[in-house]
Length: 157
Image (cartoon, rainbow, N blue to C red):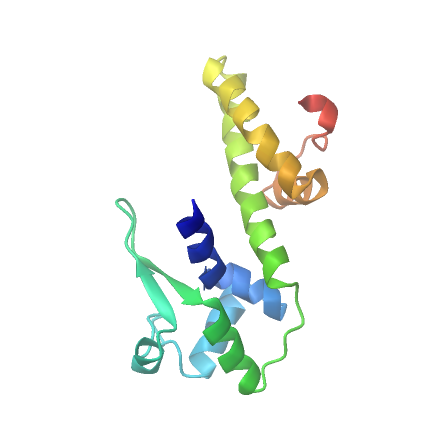
């Protein structure tokens, strides 16, 4: 578990880094292009490779993607004059976790609506993590995914 936490402290998604700079993931990707870290096709440049700015992730299913070294990328862009106007690194990571939990919650709700016991089991496993990140952050993530229901409350658990 310690290794995962260290990995996540170091490597970030475009979404998380973009949140720190107050821009969308697409705009953040464009910032990386403007400052020589990404090619036009979105792949890292030789400069990014030589500098150890990214880690290529190849999942067992789906297409490969890149995570970016938080400190190196942020320092490089700030030195290049890009202003950080978003949330802190910690807040960006919590927002990402909230989105993951919200997606799992919606999946669990769908299963429960279909009468599956798996939905209930998923809800019970999600509850402690949702409480940890905070109901307000979780409900905001749910809403951003198009959830139209009432906000989740502690009484739901």
